[in-house]
Image (cartoon, rainbow, N blue to C red; front, side, top):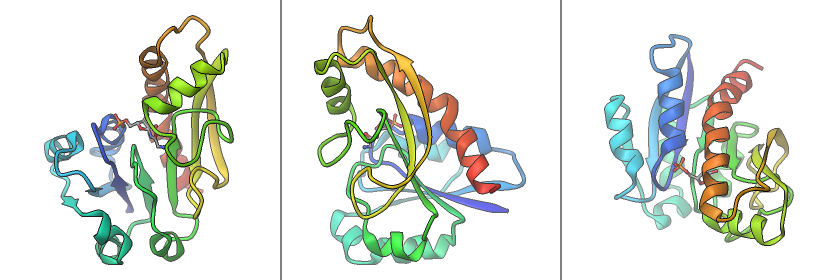
Length: 187
Ligand code: GAR
């Protein structure tokens, strides 16, 4: 059985799609959800699926405690689904090629520090882009710079607010992220 650990910081709608997709599939299991935010919506969503949640602090993330938690799960894949802190190099080094992230724009544009959530969509609109999209990529030690696994575009020329762009991009994330995770696990 292939084991998946999810990291999320907020609402967790992507995490929920992933938990739903793999729920009841015998070959895969979401074994844990880790969050840095004790008020994150993802906690309640994980409880619906009886998936254990661990809340940690930024210090614990950066001082090796979260690596220990991850090791106990022994995951085949670590998935960042709306995880907004810098991912620590100790976990990346311990799980080479096994940490992936979803970014709500077409990298390499609109990535880097501070580029998350609505900030990304605002920047895309300000630059009058006609298209945005999603990028699923491996995580390395630099924000949003790891090798790209999958991208999908969406037309946004009729969008006037960052929230409208966010909705279109989120729908794409929900549609494609779980399937791409399955493909990565079967490589
Ligand atoms: C998603 O759009 C995800 O791509 C983005 O945060 C949102 C989380 O939504 N991630 C980043 O911006 C990472 N740089 P969710 O909590 O509802 O899944």
